[in-house]
Image 1 (cartoon, rainbow, N blue to C red):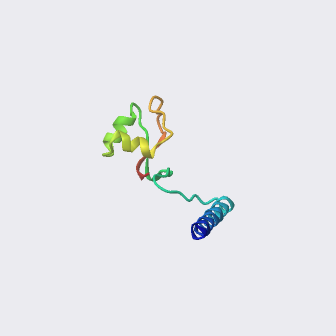
Image 2: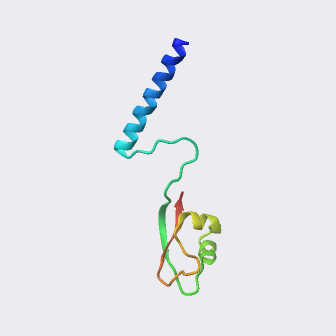
Image 3: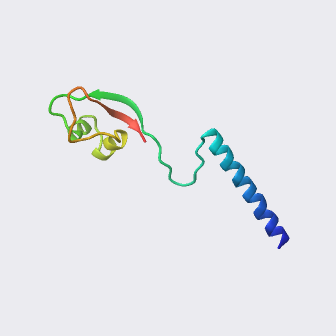
Length: 90
């Protein structure tokens, strides 16, 4: 029983240390699926009449991939000259 308590204490100590380091250094430690910001490698200035779907199709992207690399886009209000990401990763 003493051995189990000692092991648990060491585990809690390590986790506490990691939490303190993470908080101090603003480092995100995580397990499993984490959100990450999209990375854009190439942009396109929208032309008159373009929509999210037409831009995605023009650059060989699925609509979902286009939306993933343009997370804040309002597909109902694309304007001429708006920069949209057409190559990137999430």
